[in-house]
Image 1: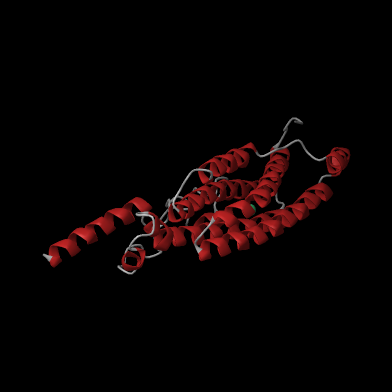
Image 2 (image 1 turned 135 degrees about the vertical axis):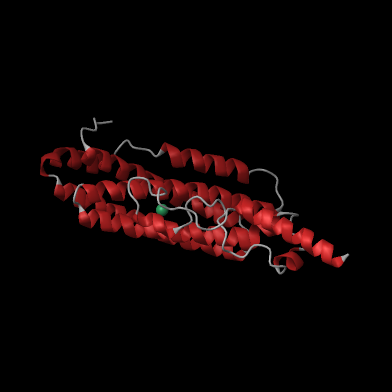
Length: 244
Ligand SMILES: [Fe+2]
């Protein structure tokens, strides 16, 4: 790897890392969608695959903007254009492997759906962090066109993360509790209202304007999944009492 001498070099490195991440996600996502049973989850993953392909194209635009912006680095950029960069996103590679290992386990279909969402959100949060950081670097360097493109993708990542959280808390996690038995009855009982984060860490859109760390300002105003479960168990106890 070439030495990173300044923030501009670090931005280029982050962009290469995200490019590799998107490439790996495009390759891995069809298998995740294939394994999903819940129709909304399957459709959501396929839609995100389409969005991810656009995000990769957007990174191509970012790369050419960075290239035209840096006259002194023409040779380096020209060579990396021909031979590619040696940056492989090890973070997403690991998260994908971990997800594939989990999906290879023997699981009830409803539990598999919950596992797929968990794996997808780990990847999503990596991307949110990466795009938030890169956007902050670009804005700091006065590269407004680059920052704007990165912000667009960051917004899409948040949207997808929120969709997964909503689906998990409202439906998939509920169904996975006992492998789908009595799902209808319990999902209509008010458990999970779609307003609770699956993890609560980065589900807020407010992080899209944050600084280096995208999740820094994404303070979870919403309850966590744990809180939701607690509330729900309280509701269960109350229901038991009243039925006595
Ligand atoms: Fe992405």
